[in-house]
Image 1: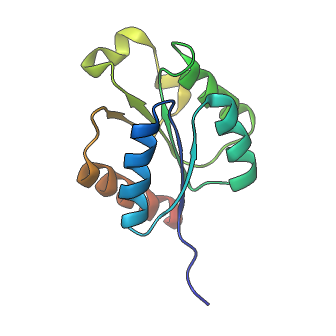
Image 2: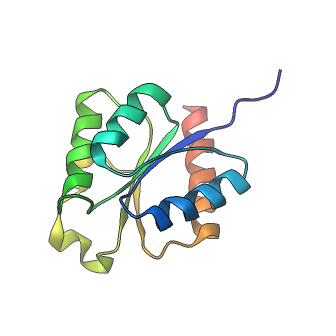
Length: 129
């Protein structure tokens, strides 16, 4: 029986970012699920049961990404969650993400090789625990 591909759920209101993430992730052998809003992301999360979630910090509203992560916490999420931000190194000034239990933060523009390296390490660790 073929091994199940790890499913990565990506939520971003920029279709170009979602397209980039799809190409990089599917090219590396991951399954991809995408959503263009926090609301659609929650629906996808419930349906898809992803192995990793990547969510943009600022979508429809300035902190919709953090609201989405709080919703995941309320649902008992156990998948690693990464925030995607274009805010740069000043992210800590915009939001205190430490209580959200994030696995990490990716800065836009995101590097495909860096993304794959971090996801590979994260999935290797999460499958051992």
